[in-house]
Image (cartoon, rainbow, N blue to C red; front, side, top):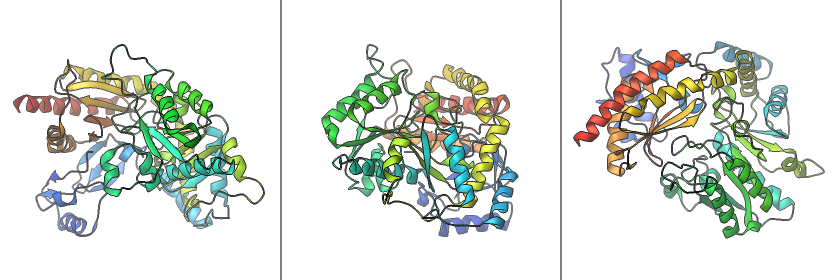
Length: 467
């Protein structure tokens, strides 16, 4: 898996920048980062301010945020009205917990979210992050079966190379071995099936092969032991892997056949990333549970949610029953106020419609890079795409571990950043470059992205040939 990598040091503009570097190296433990790689000659990238689709480092250099700050800032940076909403809420009610209490903003946001979800997913359980949302979904799925007398149904099936979070339950669903091994033994009950990346499938393989492998797995595990299937509408890890036509409809049939809940993990795919409020709407399937986070608030403040159908919610809604799960800050009133303003912006500016209008041009910009031999595939949907990198396009020969390490971390990550583009060079699965720009972007930003990608990928191919 690609991690944050050191960048060559820029000349310091003042003592403040130098002090920030020193303080960061001494005290800030960054996530998924090789902290030992930073020193006086390799500085930590410090993002100091942001506006629209751009961010600026502590030296004043501008970067196009081609990853929306990890798929989060869908409405772009620097919207002061979000801060105004937060400040107004603090004046009215700074905080009260949803633990046995309610407050106006959480109620209003739950109603707004329920209005936007597909089908009867009308019950919103707020969390603080995507991992927590997945954790809540796993727990409610197990609990739901238990209250119906099916306590043996505890297993969760997900896909290979899928990322579902880092808490222990979510990590069990995650299908990326290097993220799991350091913390094993995992929570029992996790199993995985093939994903839908068909790039190297045999030509005669059935289009719904991956869906049928899910059915096989449920039968192998024993249908009376399986609680839920959790899938992203468009799989993030492995490089923006889309489903085959009819895949989710078949998955829904299989889940119904065996009485298994279907969880749509939309921590990334919701809030316009695929041109709809939810990815399930893009691919026209009805889940029992949706998990979301990241762009719910535009990422201006942390918030997530687990959204359940009427059927899932019902046994926890009467008499003395309850879902014995929660957190102090879930549904925080300030976060809820920011989320409500964020959803106002989505409606006022029709951000979902903007993505649908412009995604073809975004995709075409990436397709135009196929003349560079290192580009083996372009895939994705909406404003969420990946370029898979190969050594030989005819055979689709990929890079081994050492080659991938050199290509992604030794060259691409740093060079793209130095040229003013933030995106993700990743090898959870095959080596890819992922792009997920803010939903406000258009042709001007696409051209900027394409120019940087072309120059860097052409140089990367020259280096591969020289090796």
